[in-house]
Image (tube, rainbow, N blue to C red; front, side):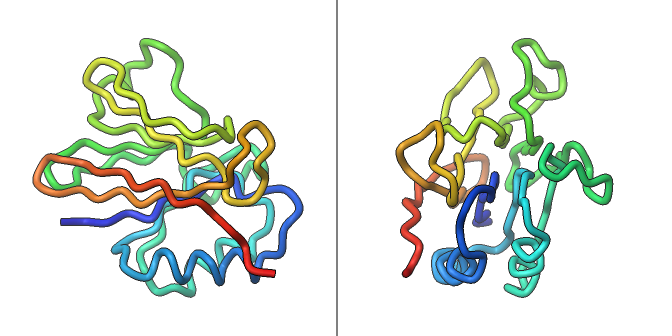
Length: 157
């Protein structure tokens, strides 16, 4: 079994220390953290690295940072799992070869099966914007199955 803490699009007006305090608590039991891009402040990634869990990050558009790949693909618990910032276009070959495609960019929660691929977007924990809720997720992978937990984010004051 592998538990992935999914977070992304950490943009907008918020205090990094409050976000990291919340993430530290909610991601305490995850094995890895995956950030789908658009982190606005390097302090966010620094704080996630400080949690001493493997951190996987893909490049987004804010910032566009060439230190991170545009996409990631790994075989985990018998599933082909990929991550990219922008949602793949319909018919995208890369995404169609995946069991799970994790993306961001739209700031909208998504958990949708299209053909063989399950598309997941955990929205944003910081800038509700297009969605009324601030969210992130925990994806549990176990022997070919996947369970997604929606985590509502309430930043401490």
